[in-house]
Length: 248
Ligand SMILES: NC(=O)c1ccc[n+]([C@@H]2O[C@H](COP(=O)([O-])OP(=O)(O)OC[C@H]3O[C@@H](n4cnc5c(N)ncnc54)[C@H](OP(=O)(O)O)[C@@H]3O)[C@@H](O)[C@H]2O)c1
Image 1 (tube, rainbow, N blue to C red):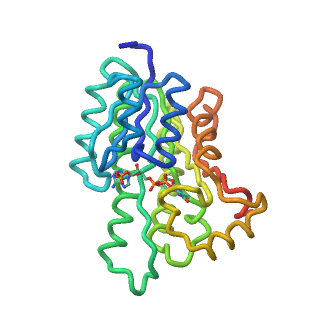
Image 2 (cartoon, rainbow, N blue to C red; image 1 turned 30 degrees about the vertical axis):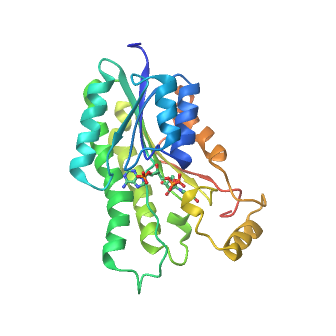
């Protein structure tokens, strides 16, 4: 094990944006710990390729406090003497449905996973980072829907707006300890999460986007990598938008 190697923790790394970020993290030389509820062949292949000391996957559900704590405990044991440099709160769920008819249990689950899970994971990571006294990074994957809203996504929108509030408050709390906290807010991305968009909705989104297309995970992952870097050390408390201009 390379004791100088920095570790990054990212939730929901089995597919979509999380998996794309993991690929970039390896290119940059980080060791990576991730969780999701289910494994994927892509993640298994990465573990075989890079080895279990470079990539830890734990089956854990964000939104379940005990599973979050068990995941983070496994991360600390796996990291050993290496520094946990960053937490990326990426795991999220979205469920379409107008609020008046969406069962409360579904809205509660969205808030539990997207907002409270990220808040509790941030708390675990911060306790570790503050103790280690080496600074660090927290990146919350938000959404433009947090500031713009979208019909049928009220709970999701509220969860992402809450996440942006968490970003600003934590940035103030831990800035003096050289820990930066930022949100990255993508527009509509081509992933499983947006696969349910109807053709009509897709066409409307593309039509309203100055750059004339939906985003991809490769449009967003470079910004995440920049925020992890030394060069981004004076950026904190911000929500940075990557949306082809749709919200401008
Ligand atoms: N796609 C978009 O259009 C879009 C736009 C703006 C923002 N975003 C944000 O970008 C982030 C990534 O989205 P994505 O499009 O990559 O989503 P995705 O393709 O649906 O992937 C979600 C990832 O999170 C994991 N996950 C979901 N619920 C989880 C839970 N409770 N506990 C642990 N892991 C969980 C999934 O694995 P399992 O299902 O196996 O748990 C998967 O690895 C999210 O925060 C999302 O809100 C997406």
